[in-house]
Amino acid sequence: MLPAQIIAAIRDGQSPGSAPLAEFAQGLADGRVSDAQAGAFAMAVYLKGLSASDRVTLTQAMRDSGHILRWDLPGPVLDKHSTGGIGDCVSLVLAPALAALGAYVPMVSGRGLGHTGGTLDKLEAIPGFRADQSEEEFRAIVEMVGCAIVAANDAVAPADKRLYAVRDVTGTVDQVDLICASILSKKLAISPQALVLDIKQGSGAFMDTPAKARRLARILVDTANGADCPTIGLITDMNQPVASAIGNALEVVEAIKVLSGQPGGRLGALCEALGGELMAMQGLASTAESGEKAIRAVLSDGRAGRKFAQMVAAQGGPSNILKSWQKDLPSAPVKVQVMTDKAGWLAEIDGTLLGQLVVEMGGGRKVQSDSIDPGVGIARVAPLGMRMRAGQVLAEIHAASQEQAQAVSSELRRAFALSPAPLDAPPLIYDRIT
Image (cartoon, rainbow, N blue to C red; front, side, top):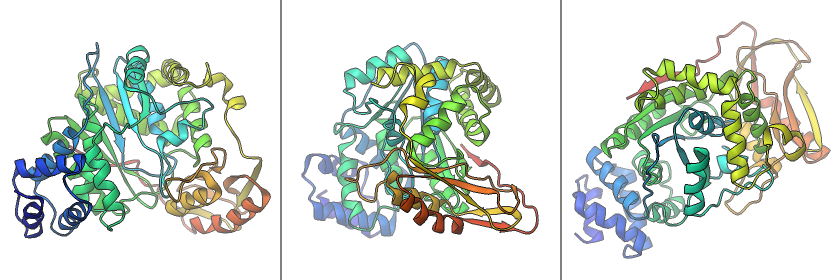
């Protein structure tokens, strides 16, 4: 089938067949498919969707359009993906925790765009840390330490890179079949033996309603399993930040506290839940619950922290970030506390607004070419359900200047809503999708 025939079949709600769809993906990678055809394909999928089998075919074909990493390691290769939110520094904690328990975690992550932060931006707040590693360096670090977190290179899923660029300018970014193929083609190219998906739901997530989150979770889990990668998804809460801080260096600090054995709160609990699922899937634990206990143990006794320090040093950072972080990590020169002017129970947090305010301060990107100020952000965010007294701290702004802090302060209060009566905080995990 010619590209135009494939597009027409999808436009008419028909399956083009697995071989033509795979050939189309290869054409995206090698240039035989034009930009016009790629845009028409994206719009046809946006309007009509793909069948479950075609979704698997497209995902695998996009994975196979580039280089696939294969591993020969003395333990299971595990991975995790989050659909994005605010204060989400889970990867910084989970990867070394799993490595401390005998797993290998070769994690390929991204940089942030929009109101959610990127894992690589957080790690690159650490002086000297290099996310851009060659494949040889990546393999060596994984074999030596047990985990590494790096940027994708151009050889991984080039069909996705081409299609995403077209989707970005044709209004087709938010279509679930295309989201699924984009996420999983890159994840499956790393050849994990098990994958856990953290699908965020709530005010700070891209999937802001339960229905949207559940649909994406179902499609991702079914497609990954259809592509022969054992996968489980957890739908988790993003009506408040995962950690109590938003901003690159601030989130590294939150991760280091948990890795150093301090109480983990929501961040620690989410790492335990996701890690427990992975360990149970690969036989490192008899159940997810026993896997959670094992994760909790390596966080509390320092083993996970030592793995994190080894990974940071191996990727160019300080030799012992756990001890030197107060000296090494950048910090904003201006800190301003924002107080509530009335009493009540904290009922709502507008996570998207908080993320946008951090972007406005320079802590994130509006366009891909923007540079980032790693020290700015919002810390000490009060948790949902907390009883607030008048004059109590809602959050603390870390800004580059007094003027910037003042501008953000006037907006920040709009992100919080109080109730005159007590309210239960939302659960951390809404559902488990298998």
